[in-house]
Length: 255
Image 1 (cartoon, rainbow, N blue to C red):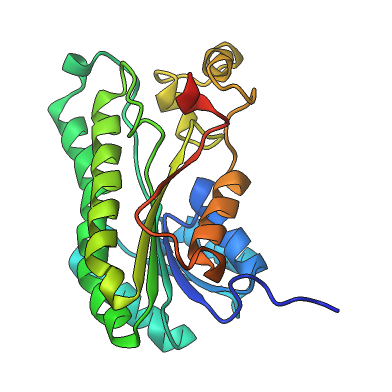
Image 2 (cartoon, rainbow, N blue to C red):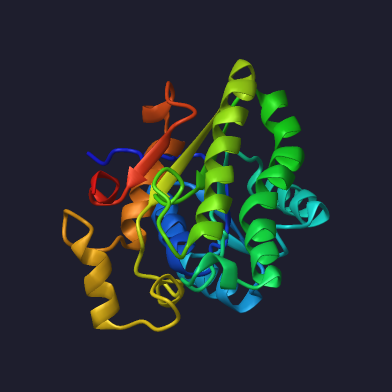
């Protein structure tokens, strides 16, 4: 006898769903029965993942997560296509090259803050009225283990993710009365296109080995690890969990 998926009949918006961690989250959500809108600035990436997941399960929406108008359009598109919206995963993010903090260009600092932090404001503004009206909803925000444990040379990235974690907790406290949950996931360095920046601009076995040495479980994260955590936090199994930072870091924060 087959069991329904953990996200059966749920509808989710996943930002940056066209590659990396976002794609891993989208695959897991669809596998568990959800319908997903992939909110992507890169149309080609979004369409490729949507086609893989199947047009009945996924749709690609081209937009900029730093613009409120695009968020409003994404929400409308999602409700028109799938009949509702239950979950928002704020996954889209960027990282600067690991380097001395005083050497990071101002333009790069501003890009980090805009792309990593402002979508929480815009998604809250666009989605909260809908979640409040229906009496339930879930935000899952992708933070970083560098939020609770900042390290040298990725300070501004850590600062942006510290804001993600703080905003998540504040919204969790504010929105609980409306039946809305907000949680953050704090991954360690993951096997995505961003790994080269984390390693200072070049992806190498030597660079990865240095990172892995600081992870007790002996490997970096993968997209499936984050997809599994996001699925749990979005599911009814986590119905009494809000305002947490969930480390998915193989023990990195212990070191």
